[in-house]
Length: 279
Ligand code: C2E
Ligand code: CA
Ligand code: CA
Ligand code: CA
Image 1 (cartoon, rainbow, N blue to C red):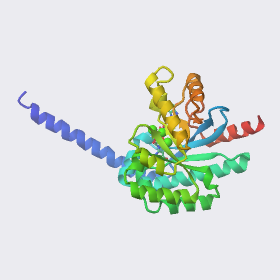
Image 2 (image 1 turned 90 degrees about the vertical axis):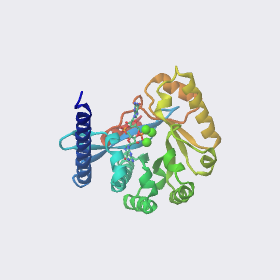
Image 3 (image 1 turned 90 degrees about the horizontal axis):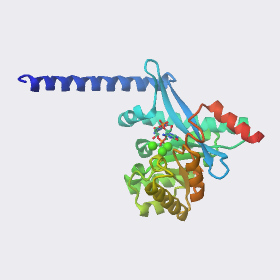
Image 4 (image 1 turned 60 degrees about the vertical axis):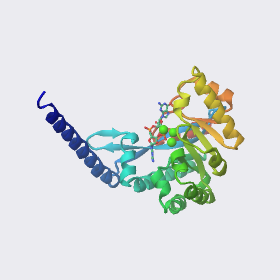
């Protein structure tokens, strides 16, 4: 018991060192990941609720680490944000996703919208509009086929700067949506002023449906509000037929989730697009 304090301090400091070490290693690895082509995208279908027709896909980044295998975005996007690496990584995601959407259109003869997640740091980057413009130019993708997903936190952070950036993006003609809606703090006043086309209801509200009556009430309220503001609604995390049926009953426009398709390689999306054409 005499050495207890000392031992604790030692344990604590060695734990901290390990944490910092792996953090630094992760950062070094992430810096190299882009150069070494270790990042890749998967695409998750977004479907029309009534027809279950494919209307778009969301691009989701993964890291194929040479030693640790496949690392999911939640394990490296926060670090990328912290270090600023999200700016070049985000630009790569944007370019790859837009190039892919254009290629699907050419190969399969059907336009498909591609959604890209924008982090707060990217949204604050003064070159954002220029980056988006040059990517659209270089890939030849119709701006209306690019969806940018922003979170409530990103939008509410600095209202004046946000309005200016949103106006730039709106002028380019891209499709703007609010991701994880309901989990952050939105000012209804700003929601009215932002020229946003769609709200994505966070999967935490969908997962309890149809049993959870509180989440059902929230889901219906978000749909009613969005439609009142002339926005479309996407439900995230749809996993069961019952959830899809309920969402159709509530008038939800689009759905995304394992029931409708897991995040997949581009080839699988191309097959869906070709299949839909043949049907
Ligand atoms: P998100 O934008 O909310 O993306 C949806 C997440 O939910 C994805 O996880 C997806 O695989 C998962 N998901 C989809 N359908 C279902 C379902 O039916 N049930 C359940 N339980 N989960 C489902 P993922 O791919 O691991 O991505 C996690 C988060 O990482 C994303 O959440 C997004 O915030 C971030 N992220 C992914 N790619 C990028 C990127 O390129 N840039 C940035 N800034 N963030 C990204
Ligand atoms: Ca998203
Ligand atoms: Ca989301
Ligand atoms: Ca999320």
